[in-house]
Length: 232
Image (cartoon, rainbow, N blue to C red; front, top):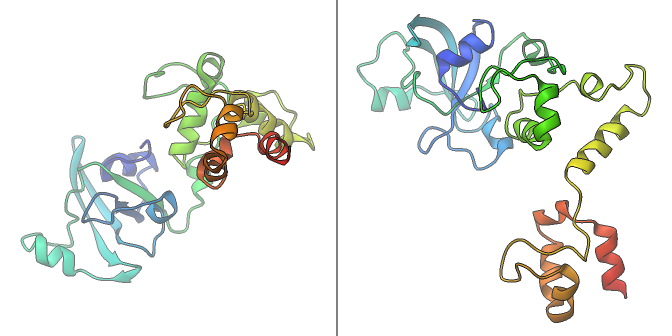
């Protein structure tokens, strides 16, 4: 489930609990343009899975259909009229995301992974979080950024005492160490000015820098150094 999978894998991942709410994020079945929309239970088409009958890796799943948070079975009746007993179409296909397990705190199902947790899938299968962090820390952050249920116990990973009052600052500083922000003297790695420093670009095309600072790319730059350059 990284972060999308079929209903049966999700069912096993959450400890075979029912009911659980899912959405299939592909065109025509609740396509999501953002993570916020992807996990919004009141947007697009969702299914409340009430019964799962596994058969090998797959099987059949049954439950209620909703659209924009309201009960609506017109989609299933129109495109899958032969299904009976509220069977969920394409339950074994990919791209399903888990939205909620009613009555259960998802933090109990997906607790933060400690440093000695062994990865069960992916390119680092069989290695612990600590081992992976040592050789490829960015992979750990990538997992967290792309899977809301992949969480890390940084107290364990970074040896932060549980009673530390500055834990959040330590964790933030560690992320900034792994992903240092670009300064004005760093070379740009994209676009028409690829290979030039931000300072060089500012001298020839200040409007480009202004555009840059008004896009999501500004998250990766040292804003103070850019402001200082502009003010000069």
